[in-house]
Length: 206
Picture 1: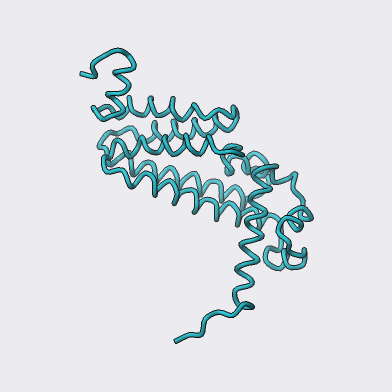
Picture 2 (picture 1 turned 45 degrees about the vertical axis):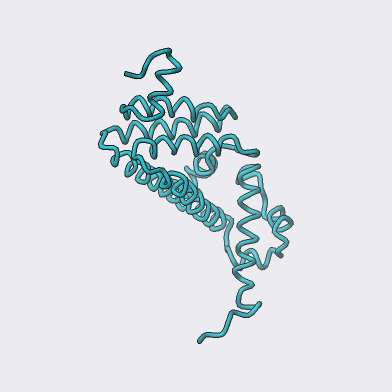
């Protein structure tokens, strides 16, 4: 049986996690280019020598932050959506999750769109990470839409992406609700969302 890891063996993991936590918070709140390595050093509590041993360049750190955030972001979305049994309502749950994300304190839009705006034209690794995230989200949402049997996947993806961009610019979480209504109309059917929309219009839903 292998011996449990010692404190020295787990230190790189702890240092890496502390560094990524600090960098992610600072990059998301203030922008990548506005945050210098000295500020990351102060927030992480790690010396610059240690930071550069873990990530030789700031670009490497940015890519690692985006990659870890992508995994956490999509896992959180999937945990919420895949707990919904009905395929149509599962798609609409995406917009409910987005609404909750938009309403969180400190929401500053999409980290990948923000990174693309700052570095997408000058850093191939960052651009590749942004495109990877967007493709993964596209594929994830497309699979859920296809399960409904209604061929509107691309339109629903555009609604979700449009809501993300609009909420990030306006600081208003309501685009998620507006996009949800539009997605429900595209999906059709007579689920709870359709009945609610009909009631709001004063109709019977039939």
